[in-house]
Structure formats: C-alpha cells, structure tokens
Length: 391
Image 1 (spheres, rainbow, N blue to C red):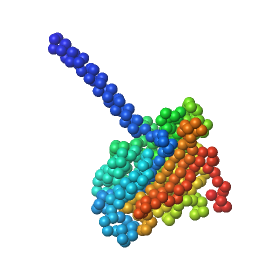
Image 2: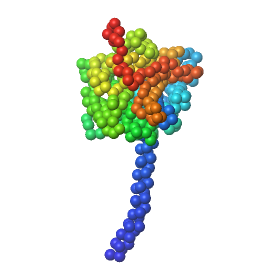
Image 3: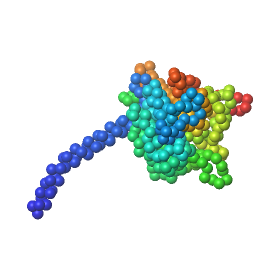
C-alpha cells in the first residue's frame, strides 16, 4: 500500500511537468500553424507565386540536359535546373512556390524520393512555403503515383495535401489553400485569395479512350463544393463582402479549351500542339459556373508559354523549366510569376484583391522579365468582345 502511495506521489509530482510539456507542444503547434498560414504582405499588400512547371529532375549531375545549344551541352545537367531555381527565387522572393507536375522524370530517376528531395531542395533551403501537384511522369520510377504524392506532402515546408479527408475522390493531391488578408486589418481572418490544386491524371485507363488523363467528376464535385463554401463564408460572415474572393487553379495537363486561341488573342507563344485529354470532362465549364476562378495555370507542353482569356478565365502555360525536359535549343527555360495586389482604402487600410498580374522569368544572362500583363482587375467582368471565329 505504501509502495502504491509513493507511485501516486511520483505521478502527482510529474503532473506539472506534463502540463508544461503539453503547453509547450501546443504553443509550438500554434507557431507552426502560424508560420504555415499564407497571408498578404503588410508593406506592399501583395502575394506573389512562382510557378515551376516540368523540372523533369532525375539524378542530378549525372543527368544530361535536353535540347540545349551545342555550346551549352558540356557540363549541363539537372544542376542547371537547381541553379535556375535559386536565381528566380532570389530575384522574386515569392510568398509561395507552386510545382505543377512532372517535377521529376521517374523513368530516369534511380530513386524517386531522392530525386524529389533534390528537385525541391532550393525552396526548402530558402525556407519558402511551397505546394505541388503531380504530372504524368512523376510516378514512372520507383514510387507509385500515390506514394509520390505522400512523399511531397511529407517534405519540409510543404503545404501540399494528399486529398480532402472523408470523401471519395479520384487522383492524389486535390486540395485548396487559403490566403488571408493583411494581419491587423478587417480581413486578416478571411481568405481573400483561394487556390485550388487538382490532379489532372496521367494516362487514360478507359480502353476506348486513348491519350492523357483528365479531371474526373468526383474532383469537380469537390471543387464545386469547396468553391461554393468559400464564397458563402466570404460574403456572409462578418465583415460581409459584396463579391467572392478571386481564385486561382493549378494542375498539370491543359484542358481542351487551351486550343481555343489564335496568335491574335493570347500573350506568349504557342510552339506545339495542345496535349490535352482526347475527351472533354467539362472542368472548364465547372470553373466558369463556379465564378471565382480568374486564372488556371498548367505545364505539360514545355514550349508553350501563353495566357489567353476565355469566358472570363485566363488559361496560362508556364513554359518548361527543367533542363532534362524537352525544350527548344536557344529558347530559354522559364518560370511564371503571379503577383496578386490588394486594394487600399483612402484611410490606408488593405482590403480585398484589386488585381492579378503575371510575367515570366527567363534563364538567360539577364534573368529577363517578359510578357508582363494584367490577368484580372476587380470590377472587370472578364469578358471580351467576340472575335469573328467566335472565341
């Protein structure tokens, strides 16, 4: 009995220490949540994203470059991709990096996990928050498509998520991220910018349909419900807003609607055909009906880098980033930058989003900035006069 009494005394003695440890863990979790929370910058009222498409990373120094000039071949490798990441991150100082698939080239990667670690290392090294979706080549190595996404989710500074909990959904890596207003303003607890990430698949699994994958019905239902919920909260919860917060969508394979443009109605270049799925699953219409997405960003077709507007939505390619990816000799690898600007009241308070702008950075001697344009302005309905061809 005495022995039992001593044990209880010992447990009682440890209780304050246990409570202290729990409090510390809670505080650490709070700090981690705070650190991971995306929000607009107080000084400039901006939120900047760098989109990196198609790194096709493999084994680092031993992996040769594709489609570069003869003068560039010697010594060119995956490390050129790494160097370009550091260059563009230092120049742009982004609030978020988005890797839009084919982050590694699985078939040439000896160890897919190590290739992903090496590919994304510059973002982690520079302590930048980042998010990723997967393409059609990431899973062609030592990891399944599911395991590739699980690895991306587990990596340091990753805001990627595996899938929404509690629902049946196709693919891996369907999730959304919210960007809060400036801290200390009336919108600091509201998401004033919403970002949707979707798995556009790899290849068709339907025998009668050939070619690439597509965004499935279950994913579209999730997107519709998420968009609707975010819009309702933004407009109905105090302080109530008059119109929804704008949204951006990121996925790998372009939609068939990317074929809607001619050289007269886009900014950038189209140097190869649009490699979308051979069927149209309707996701573009779903986005138009939802009403909040102002721009969608993809990769996949490396030597296309244009943005074109259709039914109020800007459809944008990033252009190929990686040196082990196919490209065009003499045509610089590139990244797309998206800068979202808040509106400022006469009293100097930051409010909701005013505009969305974009440009591209080239991996040339000057790290050139090209094709700066406004994708969306608050108050514009995003519709243009139809061209004679109906686009």
